[in-house]
Image 1 (spheres, rainbow, N blue to C red):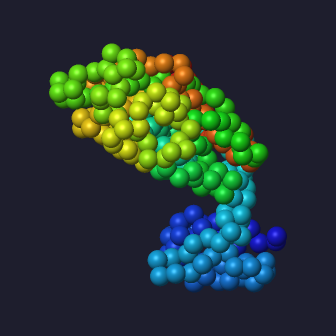
Image 2: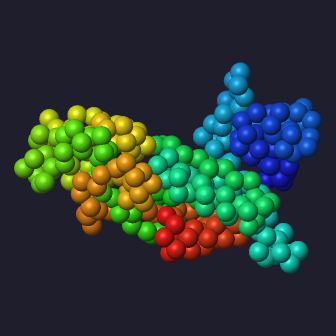
Image 3: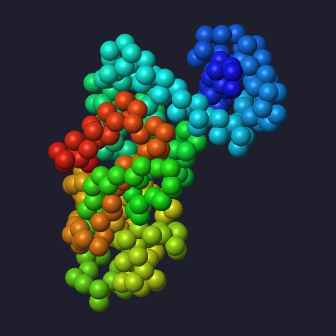
Length: 292
């Protein structure tokens, strides 16, 4: 490919979703953006974007281009930093993704990281769907559960989150708390709406709590925590999150078989870039300090 400007333009269109957004980011006229996209699609012989009223959405070919362009852009920035003698320079966009339930712990850490590196633009993406690192949707993912097995990802164990069973004080005042498995059937439990959930505590629940006792089901961990806090029943929460709520009663202390491992995940193309390595080191240090 002999025209990096066209690839860079397409990368910004894919990242921002609109011609005007890409034009602003590049400091060019929107007509230049359209001309670059048309020329690149003509040269490659494929459609890189689906055009619609709200903007541009990358096709599968466009997503492939986004991944390669993101990696190349980061590597150019890393090279420029070395050439300029700024080996510790951390700047530009940094995209981190995790489950929404980790927001309370991760947002303060990312804010602290940005204070150390004020030239960073931080994007924190949450949701139950997995943002795809191989398509450049994020630089770093923090995920819980079984270790991801995508072949092009670098996966590092971060910590094991202790998980316990909790109920609100209001629930405990009205129903008490079970002394053991023999009393589970007379209580109300909060479970998952996913019968195939691999979360270790939900596997334990399927084996130990009668189906009739699971009276409230949620599709995500944030909703489950809200249900516990609202008095809907007994449910599972990470211990560090439960400690933030003094109106909770610990029904069962965290057990080793309920622990939820956290993984740091990066794509092999971006793993060695300066800003990714700097963030990984920062997060690991904070985890050792007990801030996760």
